[in-house]
Length: 255
View 1 (cartoon, rainbow, N blue to C red):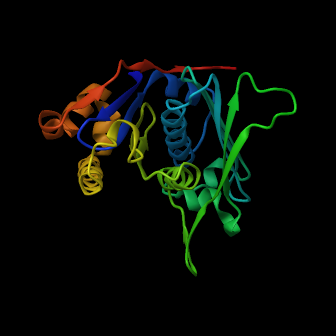
View 2 (cartoon, one colour):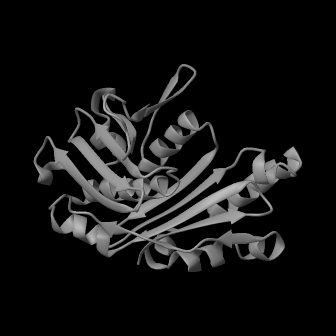
């Protein structure tokens, strides 16, 4: 399975994506010998980059780049609008010194130094025209409280909220053979969902979120996207309608 499925909820202002990557992810790992915690974080960002690239409205590349003074000094994932992707990571310590259970904060936010840069780079960008960049600190500020971001999913949700100002939920998981992910995004109360009462729209978003919360890592890692969609939104499909679009293939790009 190397595919991404996009779906829309007719009864709620929600757009979603499900991604499943196997051989393309294994092609990344074949070129590396990273410790388990690093592979897990890299895999999660591969899933995130693929999910975000599916909504690009131009021919080009989405780049996720994380830098820090921690054990992971640099992490880069590139995914083009045709869903061809590649990834790399650089360590500042010996691989065997990294705790297998280390979190994203442990590896990428040492001394509160970590930051995530997401770049959107159109293929037809003119000379001298800078690409769009969004920067996310790997800490969430809530008033005077600073909460460390502990996962790729948290970091991407923060980016989406700050850049697009749309409520977004994302679930990411990976192992030595597969990467899986689910993205749910609340659409503006306009366009195709302008007919929905604001309260109905809010209830619909909450309902779809609650269904998303039931997803498991095992399902994301073992089931095809169409099966996940059918199981996850079975009642929703019968009641309000969930429409999926043709699955898109994902491939590893060595260059």
